[in-house]
Image 1: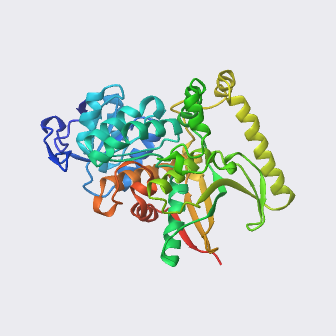
Image 2 (image 1 turned 180 degrees about the horizontal axis):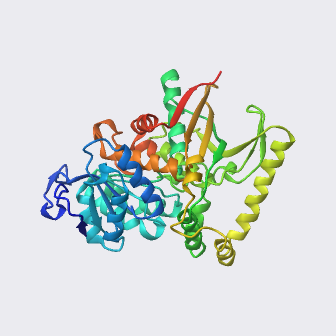
Length: 439
């Protein structure tokens, strides 16, 4: 790993030796040179996160941007605002364990936009778990998260690292929305247990990038060659730490469906990110000691309104899911579809990103029958403009005062790794995450 740039204000990582001492049987690294490293800053999404950090990171936050090409990193820094002038440039590649390890030990927290994560993510997780460095990413890849848990959860617990996956539109609105419901219910009934809980997309507007598509196609390719991984994708509780403690065979509501919700007076159709988000939320419940309760049941959908028009839209969405699911089940179908979709490195225009938005409501009942409602909303394209805020704030939260975070380590979720502190930071950044009793 090498550093770029000529400013004498930037810290020299090469001059710091890796001094470690044993404490409670684990190795503790010396004080790092940097607070936060963004790995993948030269990519489409990475560039958006870098721009956000250059404008919104607190003064004197020591930031580094990392990637394979020093010249491209310098170009990214040069395009940013004055706050980025002193950022450290770090040349590192996912297939260079030594460079990744040096990068990890020299920062308090690292966030990665380098995907597909199933291809490139595990070496970065390994470096952070070994170094005791907090880590966040944007993955929506269930296979990658399962492998991360199996291989690095114990190591991260020993080192004290928080490995937090899915810190963007996958799956912060879902995970923090349910957490907000739990906290509100707990404040009023004392235990915060939730029963039937529904996530509904009310409004959404935005684009899609080639990187997101490449990640999804790559995961399907891998799973198609391995029956065990196919089972991971099919299991609604595949990210839970103890599968035997969860319902078996799973939750039938996870299958795409169209139905009328009488209580909410709306037709509900599938939501394309539900297969990822639901597993993350269920992991949050499990690794928090079932703080939402063993009777917690969670699903996600898209609200289409009442009447015949709502029914037509919901059933039409279900039909579209069925057709696309059939096409994507085989390699030739995936290759055909990919010809008409954006390539990796491409993304929505600035106008699309700025004009985007999302509005989500979550509805729950407690075991005692009390109803609560949460709203999660933000301006900006969900997958890019809003996601750059979410990942940026997640990185700053992971790099911030550790005493204000949950006492946890290992492979975590946004709710269990950052919890209320991340909710507070995102609200301060302009995102709405609010829960109240529903009368």
